[in-house]
Length: 156
Image (cartoon, rainbow, N blue to C red; front, side, top):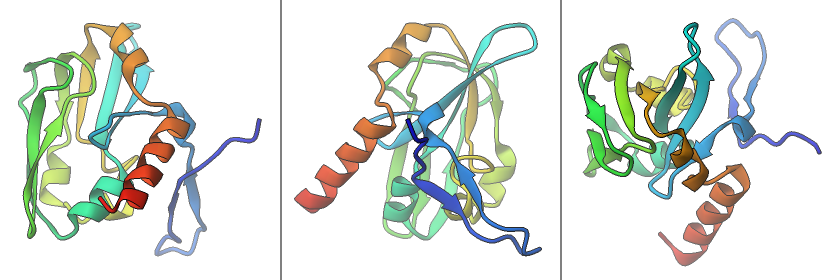
């Protein structure tokens, strides 16, 4: 099966070329958050969370972001922060339950990073998973792409 990509980073300022992000390694929510799970050196499942390119494009002109403190306990489906554009303030929802182990504070100071790289440099929080089984409830890449196409067709 051919790997699929839905996001491409543009040519770098150094002219080094285009970098593809393979989104088949990600899971998605119906509220346009993404999650990618890795293992820590201690063998713990760590979920990196951010918002999708579709969400960034819909929000446009970002001006502020609020992220939770390290140590905060989060439950899947609940807000973990907010992002504000010139159009609106939107909640950011936790895809999985666990404890915040890191927050990307640098991103809050450089929101212009999100439109350029929402899946790598644009990560928002890292969570030590407490309920890995919740990942099964999230959308895979194909289901997320279908949901976005259906939303576009419906005019959302």
